[in-house]
Amino acid sequence: MALESPYYGSRRPPWQEGSKLERVSDLLTLGRTTIEESLYLLAWAQQQNFRRLGEPSVPYHFLCRGFTCR
Image 1 (spheres, rainbow, N blue to C red):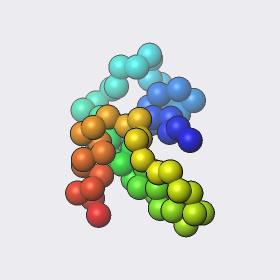
Image 2 (image 1 turned 180 degrees about the vertical axis):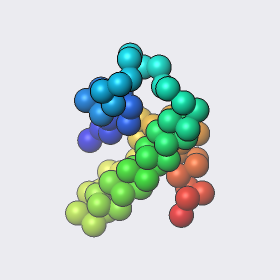
Image 3 (image 1 turned 90 degrees about the vertical axis):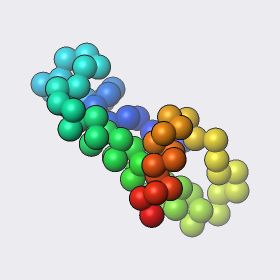
Image 4 (image 1 turned 45 degrees about the vertical axis):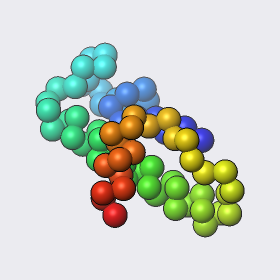
């Protein structure tokens, strides 16, 4: 399973050109969304009895901040 980052790929807003974010607040939203979606998917996978959970391909600082959101 792989998350597609908010503001990139098919999730990019129509007004956004390339990978450049419009506002600093977009970066904060991107980070927060990545953390919340990762935590949700981890909880879902645990409920589904998936065994090998870990080694996410999320930047380290997002992973660390995810643990502080609980």
